Length: 107
Image (cartoon, rainbow, N blue to C red):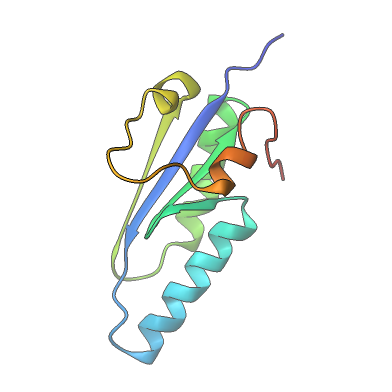
């Protein structure tokens, strides 16, 4: 059975005014990286998932690590939708080129 490759984007806007908020931001970001996300651009992280079911399980993991304040959003899109993304200025980061559909990070 062939898997339908998905991409999960996690976008967040977290306050960093107090030392406690800064620590919560760093902890959240580090946990995203431990879950296999890479930074697409500032406060936007992306991860390849082998299926929609896997992506939904990953969303549940993210729910558990969301800080008390701020704003965290996720969206699951197909590999085709991701490939159709337009970049108007600049280009894909090297990480995005290296970690593509063929090199998934699975935990």
